Length: 295
Image 1: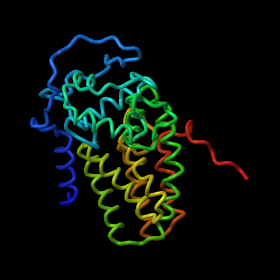
Image 2: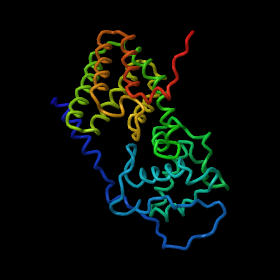
Image 3: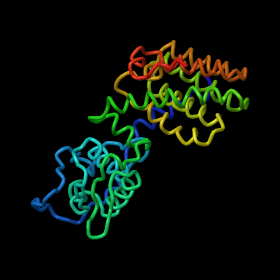
């Protein structure tokens, strides 16, 4: 195994077991108080009561500690519909419910506001916004939708979007023969092969994600590059096959290798064809990706 492959596999295992540091715990200085009846107040039945306690779960890949966990928890509740549109979110209640500080609540709500999930207005407070206002291209929202009631729609939409983005990116990338990028892509395929042989799905997934993100970046199209986070999020969403990247297998690995070969030869058509073959490894894709129109 190459040094790069060993390093990446070790890092993947370490990152997967990370926890927030105990020093992050900063509770509201409130005693437990009886619930106050309020019209439209959110129901916290689906919330994680252990968020602010020792042994709390790690947050998502884009933030750890209390802040990242609270963003994750509230985001999932909003996207799942547990906190409906135009419902008030009272910071004091959130702080008491999750045993976190004012600062953690305030910063978490700001993150959710930036994602279009909530809005804060003077004399109105913070409220959940309708789905039409959400930033549906945000990687966190993609992940939350993929594990909520909208999971089927989210996976179908991701698959359709990838079929639009990645074959074009592969064709464009073939025109940029950078040796350092070629080597990095080849390294990712090697890592995927080693990971598959060892049954290490986590390392396979991370190398796969880097492969596809790098491919989009080397296409030298800034608008496509802006969408690379969508592909990464799609590759990290589990729970049912959508493309050939979802389950490590020899066929998927072979298509990745053929993409590398086509890029090395500067053959855009072959790179595009190999990417389409990769995305169509699973027959389920045929039901969600429309067939090309005949002209």
